[in-house]
Image (cartoon, rainbow, N blue to C red; front, side, top):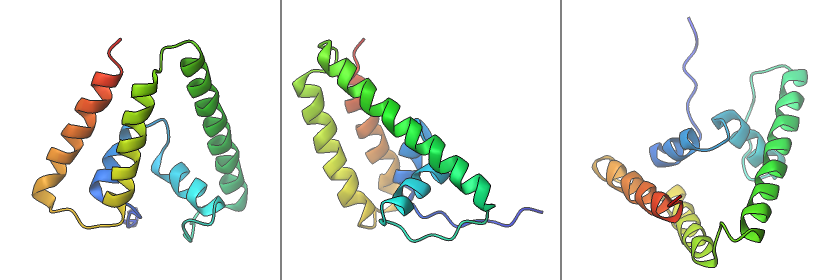
Length: 120
């Protein structure tokens, strides 16, 4: 039977990761590589470094995508403002406790703002 692994993230961050291009493990690895999280990994050294490479490739692709979308006028300055403000709020949420009954509300607001910004 698989041993339960405790998540390093609260439920809201966990839900955002699920909707992102990254896995929870990849986010943990990126944070670990940037000395923002000291986590023990129960995988082989080879698997760890393979995932480091995959995470780096995804980050590079993400940055290129942002540059492309911004350069072509698809991602507008107002969209960047929304992303920036949401990012600041996520930082606050990550550092604090949210009442479980409010988690769905917070996720719904974030989802609504992102969908409005992505009105394609």
